[in-house]
Amino acid sequence: MKMSGGVEWGLHCCVVLSGAGAPVTAAKLAELHDVSQSYLAKQLQLLSRAGLVRSTLGQSGGYVLTRAANEITVLDVVEAIDGVQPAFRCTEVRQRGPMAVPAERCDTPCPIARTMDSADRVWRESLRRVTIADLIADVNRTTPPEILAGAREWLRA
Amino acid sequence: MKMSGGVEWGLHCCVVLSGAGAPVTAAKLAELHDVSQSYLAKQLQLLSRAGLVRSTLGQSGGYVLTRAANEITVLDVVEAIDGVQPAFRCTEVRQRGPMAVPAERCDTPCPIARTMDSADRVWRESLRRVTIADLIADVNRTTPPEILAGAREWLRA
DNA sequence: AGAATCTCGGACAACAGTTATCCGAATTTG
DNA sequence: CAAATTCGGATAACTGTTGTCCGAGATTCT
Image 1 (cartoon, helix red, strand yellow):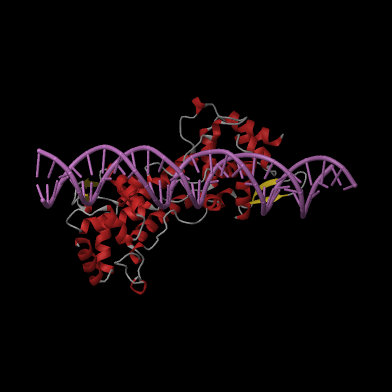
Image 2 (cartoon, rainbow over the protein chains, first blue to last red; image 1 turned 180 degrees about the vertical axis):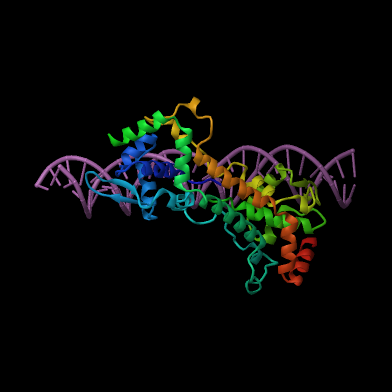
């Protein structure tokens, strides 16, 4: 089981985008993080399609967050890039084979599926509790101030 | 993000194995669940390697659980088949690019990684709370008794 | 005791989904 | 009108999952 690597990039981009007042191009975001420019563009498209960022076209275009940082949760980004489909999918094994349970007797979902769904819910709930603003606060607290100022300046140039 | 489909099979097998008093062959388990025999064998091997089941060779061999059903958690099966590696892996993006944070200043893990790890922990904790015995109790409550008896008889034959 | 029979176990291919890349079309700014 | 920029799809490489096979090992019957 593996989450798409683009989730990490997307979260970093949201943090950076929140700090910059002006639109930032995909190329700049890719260079800042030292990741593939073409592939990051794809992830940004997913964020855009989910309505988390807005892209402005033209010469001085780029990406901007559509809401305040404390209105965007980590779960929003995860679901935008990795999808909303839960990791476990019940294939209704009990309805197959020589001892199959007829479909009309399966009113309640399989206990295995219920267990997995419950775990999936608490996982998502945990991610929903953390916002981009929380991440920013943590970053501001743990990274050297000169680097923060340097990045801000580098983005402007 | 997608969990291995073998997890579902493995859990069903554990439930069946707990009900049968004698060893059950991989072929019988595959036929009962109507899944690929060769591939199910692979999943059973993983369970065996993790110490959840014990295989006995020879003419009347098969698989047996090594512990009582209430001593095996769903998480045990998930980790045996799907692996223990968390879905999110931090690639230390902050240490890359023109504004990289030097490694010696990164004493605390990235806040993004901490958020993901926390969610992963509650997910695993949720799965750890449910045992095979719980699943069996649920199955016994929700499936028609004649089918349960039929399956028990079918296994014996 | 020996041989047949049946089992598990690991090695070996096919498939799918993810990762990564590129280029043309559409759009805004200067 | 020209330059710069984003968006979307089409396309290749790659990793991991899915699926299949045959050999090694053990038990049972004669």
